[in-house]
Length: 302
Image (tube, rainbow, N blue to C red; front, side, top):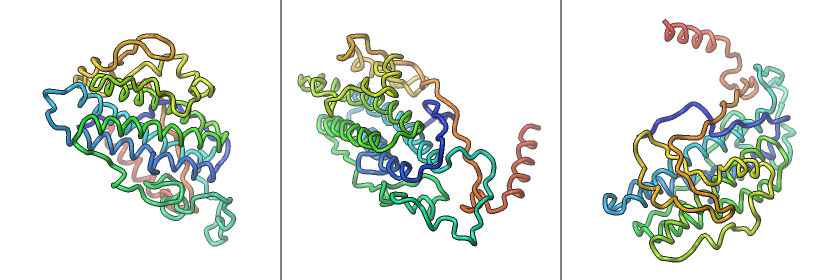
């Protein structure tokens, strides 16, 4: 089962303007072949299907715990897409008359599904609007093969994140990317260490792929300066303690101790997305909905 906390894993800065093109590019990192939906569902189904769990539990716990962190990564990438589509709007935006075709001049590169299907918000798909596919999930039942696939998936995801970073200078997007450069590096290293325990092959010598350090990017460097690249968060009040047997020793980059941190990161506030009349979100004229919600809030307090 899962415990949900109503925060993002980090605080995202406000997008200075609505940027549908950047939102379309970041969308690939959610629902593309190497997006966060894929990392989540690969690790989640591997944990569901894990055999001989009690005998080789440290490896099960590593995969299951990382899967839980990926739930927060989906939330973080989705929040970034939403902030890029929302821009700096805070109050209800009734400025666009639906009868006046306000979206007829969307910028080249915008994803029309963001406007047609989801009310200027994230979707379960890639940058082309194609839906995420269940056959992206690899769960072979062979532990070494699954861990090797997970290592490949993490470095493939890093490659695409780096390319999206090159496509935008929006601070909301780059903050998210910098953080995920670091956290993806943790996961790649964790799978490398697990494979080394099982096979003796020192996979961590291959990292980073591509051969450019996270510290080259200021949004990632600040997290490394805080030690976040050495932390494996434990997303459970009591479980997943045996994975510390794998996540131990020194980080290969700075030779400082790896650490399992009990509990999730401190986190940051969710973004407040404005109502948008032209998207009918939450409604063209939401006054009645707000009135009902206010009554429910007062009822809950009492």
